[in-house]
Length: 191
Image 1 (cartoon, helix red, strand yellow):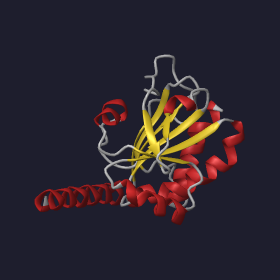
Image 2 (image 1 turned 90 degrees about the vertical axis):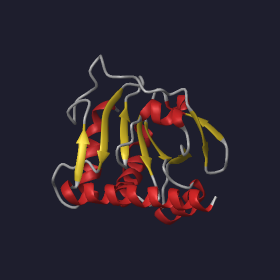
Image 3 (image 1 turned 120 degrees about the vertical axis):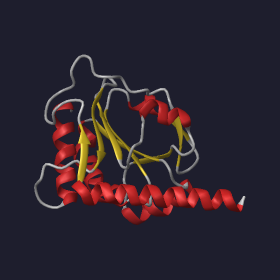
């Protein structure tokens, strides 16, 4: 048991270091299924919205409930510094565009979900947070998670319009501001 905990801790530390190095090396690694600011092509891959997760209260939440909405689906961890940079932008975008049909869902992965409630409260996260830890089906459906954060922008019909690994950047201002601007440019045409 002790060796298993040590191995898990070492793995988490390794992932944190790799994620931080990726951030330092080039502030962003972003791949887009489409250029930002355009709509999804007809052949965009469909997201698996059949998956259900537990929320902070232990209630089951199916991603299917977000069909018909524009969805930012963010895979993150409490230890992930780049994830923390994106969160204020997601809070702002959700506040600004919720009435237009935007939903933001954070899925905790590669982490201990017991840390999530205090983290969510500390960061003022106003959107749904779900537990995606220790789930091979999540990796199969939305992975691979080569780095965190991994964020998908999903259209109302379930098409994956953009996939970002790391912090997306338009190259203006702070990383936080740039990340928010990038996601806003991706979701606005879909609303």
